[in-house]
Structures are given as C-alpha cells and as structure tokens.
Amino acid sequence: MKAMASLLCPTASTLQHNLSTLCFSPLKPTTPNNLCFLTNRFKSNPARCNAFFGNIPEDMLENTLYLEQFPVVRSGLMQFQRFTGDLPDGQKWGFLVFAGFTWIYLTARPGVLIGAIDAYLLAPLQLVLDHFLGRRNLKRTDFLIGDRLGEGSFGVVYSGVVVPKNVEERVQKRGRGKSLTLDERFKQKVILKKVKIGVQGAEECGEFEEWFNYRLSRAAPETCAEFLGSFVADKTNSQFTKGGKWLVWKFEGNRDLADYMKDRNFPLNLESVMFGRVLQGLDSAKRNALIIKQIMRQIITSLKKIHDTGIVHRDVKPANLVVTKRGQIKLIDFGAATDLRVGKNYVPNRGLLDPDFCPPEQYVLPEETPSPPPEPIAAFLSPILWQLNSPDLFDMYSAGIVLVQMAIPTLRSTSGLKNFNVELRTCKYDLNKWREHTRLRPDFKILDLDSGKGWDLATKLISERGSFRRGRLSAAAALRHPYFFLGGDQAAAVLSKLSLSRK
Ligand SMILES: Nc1ncnc2c1ncn2[C@@H]1O[C@H](COP(=O)(O)OP(=O)(O)OP(=O)(O)O)[C@@H](O)[C@H]1O
Image 1 (cartoon, rainbow, N blue to C red):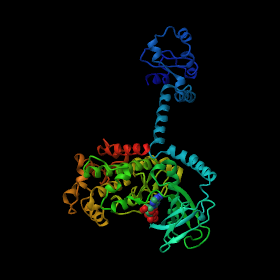
Image 2 (image 1 turned 120 degrees about the vertical axis):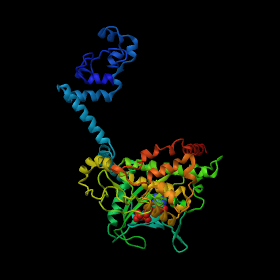
Image 3 (image 1 turned 180 degrees about the vertical axis):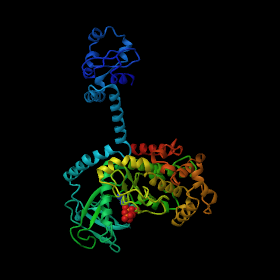
Image 4 (image 1 turned 90 degrees about the vertical axis):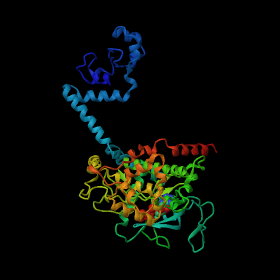
C-alpha cells in the first residue's frame, strides 16, 4: 500500500513518478520494506536490472512485486494516469476519493451495479437461453393436474406431473378423480399455480411472482423452489380456462415446515431428513435444539441471500418453507415479495401479510414513503433508501417468530400463536417482558440451552424497530450471533453429507 501511495503521488520523488511510462519501465526500490513494482522484463533479467539500477540487494528483490502479476492494478493505474494526466496533486486525490465513494455506493446493498448487470445483461441472456433450450415454450398439454394443495389470495396451487414427450396420456383416475395414477414415465412431479381470473390484482400478483422467480433463479437459485416457467391456457376444459395463466415449479418436497410442525414428534420428525441419521449420544432436548438450529441457519442464510439482492419476502412463515427430501429448506410464495432495488411490487400502504408473522411496523418502508420513481432512478437511489430504512428487518421479525414457534411447543398451534401475539402486543413487543408476564406456560428448555443463546437471539429478532429504524438483527448479523457459533448442527449436517456421498 505504501508503494501504491507513492506511485499515485507524483511528489514521491524516490520513485519514478511518470506513470505513463510505468508499465514499460522499472521503478527503483528504495528500502527492503518499501515494495515497488518492476516489470517482467527486469524480473527475468537480473543483469539488466542491476545495470539499470546499480546493484540491488537480493532480499530487496525478493520483496519486489511485479506489475504483470497484478493485471487489474496495472490497467487501473494506466486508466488512472490517462484520466488524471496533468492534474495537480490535490485534484488527483479528489478524483481518487470520488472514484472510491462511487464504487462503495454502487456496490452497497442492494447493489445498484450488480442489479444493472442483472437487468440489462443477465435477464435478456436468460430469456434468449431459455427460448433456445425450449424452457419458455411451456403449454397446457405439457402437464397433468393432480391434487389441489392450497389456495391463496390470488392463486390456487395443484400438484401435477410433466407429460413426457411422445407419450400418449393414459390417465387413470382413482377415488373421486382426485389422485392421478400414472405409469412410471410420468415421473417428473411439478407444482402448478393457477392465477385466479376475475379477482382484483390477481393477474398483477401473478406477474410479480413470475418476475421474482426469474430474478432469484439468476441471483440466488438455491434459496427457493426451482421455477420452470409459465403458460397461458389455450382452451377451456375441466381444469383450464382459456386465457388463464399458470406458473410452474419443480416439486421440491412432500411437506412444508408447517406440516412438520403439526406433528407431535416435531422437531425429531426432521432429524433424519436434516442429518441423514439419528444424532447419537445426545439427550432429546439437545437433539431438538440442534435440528431447530439447523433449520434457522438455513432460513437466515437464504434470507441473507435474497436481501443482498434487494428483495424482501414479506411472508416468511412455516407454510412458505418447503423441506426437500435432502433436508434443504426452500422459500416459496413470492407473491407478496418486494424488490426495493427497483421498487417492484412496492405499493405504499399495502399490507398483504399474515398477521401472525408480521412485525409491528406492518410495512417494509414507512407509510409516508412515496411511490417509486421509474426503475433506473429508483435503482440509483436504492442504497440510500436501504440505509435509511433497513427493510430487510421486516423478514427478520418473521424469522424470529418461526424460531420461538419451533422451540416452544405451545406456540405451534394456530390458537397458541394467536394468544402469543396478543400477549406480545400488550408487552410492546418486548420478549423479556412477555416471558415474565405470560400465562401460556411456555417451555423454554430449548431456547435456554447453552446459556440461553437461543433466547438471546429470539429477543434480538422479535422487537420493535429502534431508533433509525434499526434495533433488530439483520440476517448477516444474526448469522454472527453466538447462537450459531460452534455449530454442532453444521458438523452433523456435514457428516451426514459425507456418509451419503460415500454410499
Ligand atoms: N415447489 C414446491 N414443491 C413442493 N410443494 C410446494 C411447492 N410450492 C408450493 N408447494 C406446496 O403448496 C402449498 C401452497 O403453495 P403457496 O404457498 O405458493 O400458495 P398459496 O399460499 O396457496 O397461494 P398464494 O400465493 O396466493 O398465497 C405450500 O404450502 C406447499 O405445501
């Protein structure tokens, strides 16, 4: 760095200061500790080097860096020299500080620069590639619709299968025509969401969900269910309505976290899914705690990744976390998500949310925040918006509720969670106060293990926003919390992967 500074400062007369010749001529080292740059011409020819500089001690040569080893530095220095040319010292430094600040701004969360690269380069590239590979040419006849899995405000979700190419449909209906019995050629399972027709805002939500899925398939594919694309039904029959839009995902797993939590055996019913085996040598409280820790680690890691792209999910809850058969937790249902880099799906005053998991502030941004300007301007301003409002902390509250719900058995039922929320509101969202006053007789054993690190994390996620709209841990900060140190859950997960790969 010292040498870099000398290079950039033309008054450092110990070095040749004409940067335009830097890349073609050597710079003489001054002291053994003062690193400087030499070109490869001199590195490979010590005699020539010594002739040029006089005898250079060997230890000094060892400390010498060669400019060719740092192509980025080299081209950066050349560019810098080209731009600053004959400017006086003060202006050169001013230029450097400005360039540094611009770089920090463009790469600060939610990432103006990477967002622009995604929007103007990666998204069109994905479109072309998908067309080329036939991924955007889905059609009604590619799928057979099976059971209905759920219904939200704007869509109805079904399981289904892909009809293999050149396979005649041989569909036998079983029971009342709900379950499909198909031969083994129909093995690729999918999830289909039918966007409701005639429901206000449904079409728009469907468009947003599609947009978010494509965006995440480029930016953080491991965090969410694999999106296969969409199609518009070309005719009306029992399942389809002509003109109706369908979104399609890969089937990621039979059950979501809410399904597992309904089971009395939770969290032990996830033990072999998460770790591939039963954790030996531990009492059941410790096993429970390790499973919950692994689930929380995965949820918060995924949240960190989506927040890094500027997306806030806004509907984090067990029913929106699918558990794959390899024990991965994947986020689904981006219908309520918002991208605060470009203001996508951000409508001031619109709450779309599940009250049981929603933080007290209810909105990701203060209600007085105006509607977003056109996308490029919104993107340019987004680091300021993000710094001022920390919208990611919205999801972190929901993650905190998921943690206490998993760890405290009496909060797992719908009524238990509702009562908890009522009491919490009365305690002004102070979890410690709630603990002193609750009448729900909660069992804190899991959260109190390990000197209460789990409890401490919960109190730092479930809270009101403090001054400057902070006061809750971000995903990155939560992952640095002592709760996640010495991750026995990680060790068990790694061991299970190793034993699986050996099989
Ligand atoms: N990719 C997937 N793999 C396996 N199961 C899934 C997948 N996507 C959704 N599911 C299942 O379908 C259920 C409903 O899905 P989802 O939450 O997306 O729709 P919804 O909440 O009913 O609709 P809305 O988006 O309108 O709220 C989930 O709880 C989950 O069990």
